[in-house]
Image 1 (spheres, helix red, strand yellow):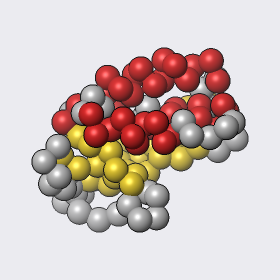
Image 2 (image 1 turned 90 degrees about the horizontal axis):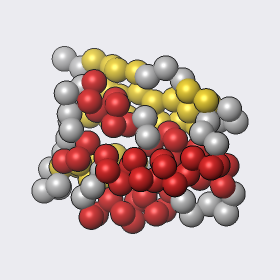
Image 3 (image 1 turned 180 degrees about the horizontal axis):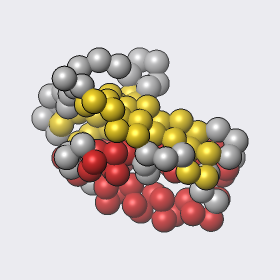
Length: 117
């Protein structure tokens, strides 16, 4: 049986929060294979877009923790359409799906544990 865990919508982080968000994410997802993913999130020439992307991803460790999972054991990847997903460090599937969103003023995240999207 699948269940959903959601976080409350939060305000977009400020541009000056980018270094602390990056540090938090590097600690939350320490596997070396996550570095290209995290670097790609900062590829926008607009700092406000980078803050949105990093802020949205920063919701994921809390969602995973609420589901009883440890983010440090996961690798972040993107599918062919650019949508992020997680696998275990051996490449095996995690059995969850998540959605992170950012808009003009807010970020949000949702997690589905079990099969499906």
